[in-house]
Length: 191
Image (cartoon, rainbow, N blue to C red):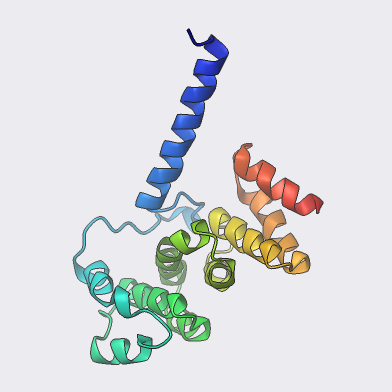
């Protein structure tokens, strides 16, 4: 028979795994500036549907041709998915230009799309690709704590502690929890 402490630990671990799995399936939980709502994309229509169709071509070889032959829908959502496609292809400057062309709250909302699309890259451990994507998100959504964490963790993994430190310190200021994410950031900063 399992001891009560072990059962509690097992249930807690299972809950964390479920939360992390679901986090990859839905929009990120992050602080939003000015009390605004984070973007939500539940269906594959409109800009999200466009992105699903063009996504296989969001790579360094095909991205420019793909975006010329299949332009993104107009509006901040289309611009966000276009920026995400460019970011996945390693064209961070072009992605930055697309987001910078928006105004006000549209910028951080478009950056949220880039985060949603780039988050699996960070979770997969592709630090070379994840660092510039997450830093782009932070540029337009400076208090997005998961982007701060992933950008800092990626820079640390790439052996760039001076670049990682301010990102991880900002994560610790913004993140409301005291959990594994916090301890991980603190351990990285101790190096």
